[in-house]
Length: 368
Image (cartoon, rainbow, N blue to C red):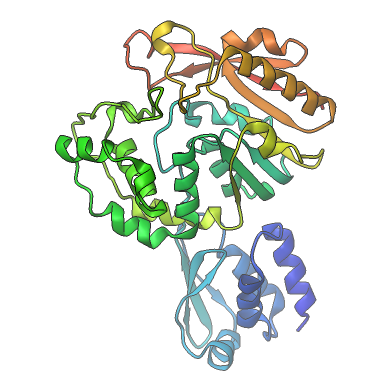
């Protein structure tokens, strides 16, 4: 059996985005088989599609491997996904169900409706992906699902948001335990909102952040000049799901090995090179006074900040770094030397019914 051949096929399939431990499990399970092609194809197929439940003829190979190397027919976990093997005299059956990670919070300017426009403008293969205004992370999770980057750095200046990403990555079980203790009620919401997050442990802060996001008006994040969260209680027809454990676990898997920075966009992405890619999704320039819901931190993001970002975007583009940016049409004049595409971007989080109408957004692509 040629172990190098198995490894070569697996690397070409997964792009090297599985751990040494996961690779060892694959090689342990299939490394001594005499039917290399069939078992390699079967292993790879176990990670593709949605629900898979098929039988493959393999002779006595799997029986011998299970008895020699594993000792039972229990599931193994590879790349964070469980692959169940059921052995038989001449065949085995594998089933696989994968939960794709999705944003765990609702966030102003979420990219679900315009994601395709952004994704098609980013490189197919990225060494390190940078998203310094990560917010809900829709583009990050989409790229991760497509395995388009080898490494990733995400960041934001919102400390509560970044702390929550870190806790999901590093201490998920404690977070889940705390979230399951919350109830959807105005009284509990107001009491939780009144707590100073600095008096809580990191896990408590993350749980509070998610709870307030799930139960507040329109999923909006807004603070006053003192940095205090001040969004009113949200009244929903159905009770919001405060603890989506399945998705949180999927998110935690994706975040393993990801750098999560509490910093501004320059500090988060300054080391990027032409082999990398940066997606900028800053707080949008408001189209009207009532649409200005983009102050995620007490300092906000001013017009001067927008101009500085545009200059940095141009600097990155001239350095041959693949860069993509989205914003409202109010920022169009800052990016005239770059490729600009107008798209329809419904803004579903604004409070006024007028501001909820479909508006034009811009997608800016740097020089290649």
